[in-house]
Image (cartoon, rainbow, N blue to C red; front, side, top):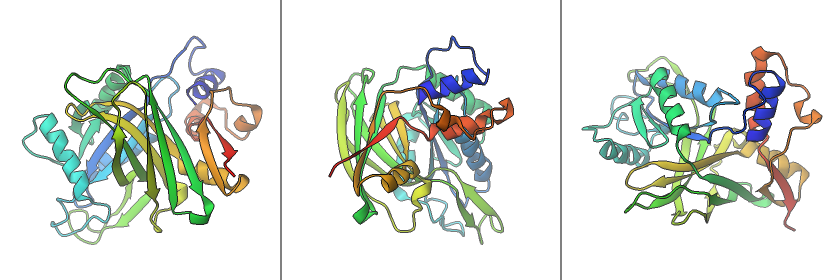
Length: 310
């Protein structure tokens, strides 16, 4: 996918052909709540960061994490989770914060900042992208006879050395985009809030104890989740330092499209990157002003193939 993005940007004259590498993905977490009046601008910023497509910059993997400690202020956030509050508390211990707050943004587990501070966020993203990262590949096994169940296989390679005395976890999240809520009470009463990459599930699936590791997880998709808006995110995170060492994301809507042209049981497996062909570029507006749309669309054409497992 990185090669495709570099090629398209070169084609449209946005970056020089000498660009050889694209930075690794960067995970941006936003701790937020529908009960917090300061959070909507941060939610909008997370969406902007996730949508921003740059051939020379990193892919942003967004995680919108709704905490539950605002739920007693007049409005219960339907996406809130005590587990996500606990995750934020672990970051507070890591960054020596006296208390947790919203909106808080954490970039690749390395830096925390006020979630609506766009300049600080972009600086933190650039610094994180410059650090050594490993490579994560996500494979999906699904059976159309049980559409709500799927298996996720995560393979990690080229992992940077884990800090001495620390260990690293392989974590998988399911996120859902384009969710809205009509808030009736609390600080945001009367507003319709739009959320980016809402974390529906977050679970540790194994240890990453070596430069190359793999793990498998069986996931269940709830009936009210819209599959064409779901994304599977996988990352490796140090337990003590909370640094994220590698990450990747897989758009389940692409998986669903593959299922319609493949056997009832299929695997989406990584393959070597290649240049996009004419058919894949057809229909994109090639004016520089529209390059963002083209690049976002090509990000969804992840380097994958479908093979039958009958």
